[in-house]
Amino acid sequence: MFFVLKLSLNSAVAVLGDDILKHIAQELLKTVRNSTTIDWTIKESVQSALRRNIRRILRLHGYPPDLQEKAVDTVITQAKMLAEDLVKNGDKTEQ
Image (cartoon, rainbow, N blue to C red; front, side):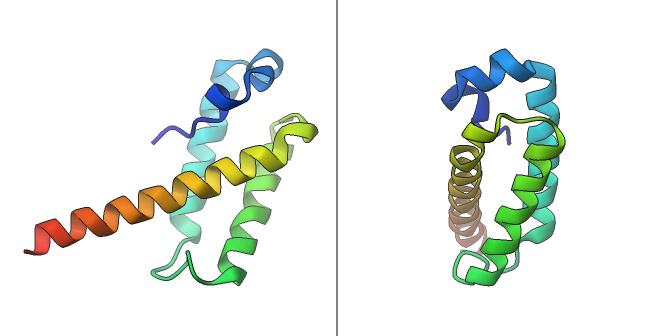
């Protein structure tokens, strides 16, 4: 799963480049996978911690500060879509 940070935020590509964004995406994926629980989409405390970790990764790699909130929202939205997809696919395999 490659988060669509570079597609939605072209100025970040200009500042960071594809390789750094790819590395950020890999770290974000690892963080999302390690931070999510069964009901994480409902629990505000888990989402808050996840947002904090996402911001930390973005800052660590020099992601443009003015674009960070949009990037955090994008990652959370994509993670929720992935979770929904996993639930749907899980239901299909159990039937």
